[in-house]
Length: 400
Image 1: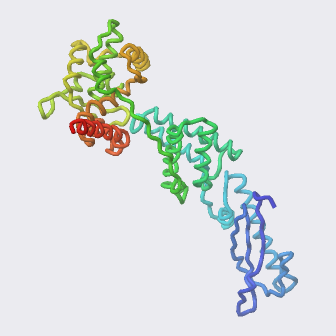
Image 2: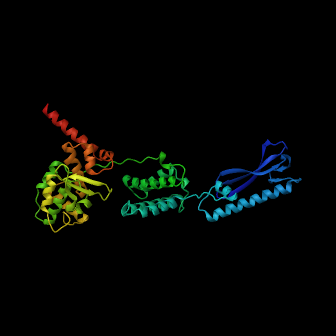
Image 3: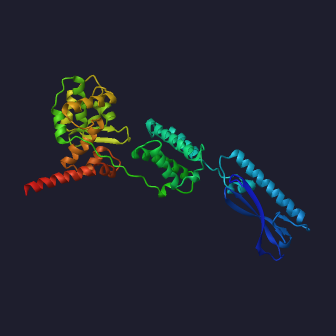
């Protein structure tokens, strides 16, 4: 018998005989190697039961019992045929539920649920999430669909087939077939995890397959300018105006920690005098939506004055991110900085050289960076603290 067909078997419970010396007639249905039994409500003397042909031998009640079993078989086949035509996937329990005239609980597919989740997510674009976040979910959904097609030779599989083994195979596929780095494939699987949480919340799935699955952690080295590199960059004057402008904007971000978008969109109205009588910057981070408050250090204030233009709402002239990073490569070559200079290094330099190396506590650094938790800051900059401790101990050792 093929695993995707249904088998119907009538049998009697010989170990349980009632006062009339009769046994209950049961019906067993088997589908995809799963069984379920139910009582037909009929009883028969075991001496009159033909187990080979699954009928009651000629007797007073044989015609009624055999007709009823034939009717049950017919209704089960009708239920099975209905589910085959109308459902993408179903179980042996669904067959019995349909046979009783009840509506079976829908068995959702993996790709199907992912689609339902992204439909909900689309409504939240520009309300709770960014368009780029939604696009990333669509991209990860395509990778998931490609994996299912590759692994199972199907367009979709039942959601309840997602176990920890499925996730391990998916991770292996992303690494070997898609050639993803660990950090990239972690993101794809994390997005899928959120879909699974949605499925559990909607009662589409009973157990969380991620309970036994663990991500392979990836810790990137934090690249930043040390004090000497930052100082040399500040002091260097470039004759080409566009290069000098990019240098100034980069240095400004080294002393404020602003990301590129926040720097580019910074308005004079975002700068205010705080409770301490000093100037502060207050902006909303486009990446997280969190409010970012940072005191305006003297070095940053000097650069603002250099670009001051009363006819412009923005603090700095507009520049594209691609051009910015291209000019930074020229700057690094000229100043002999042997690091791949990008705008993001300015934010890392602010956290490391400007704050942590000047004994600013980790919790204050976390607050100034606008991180949602101090753990994020610790994971990224913990080694910087260790390095600073090592430097201080070396100084102490030299004294002795």
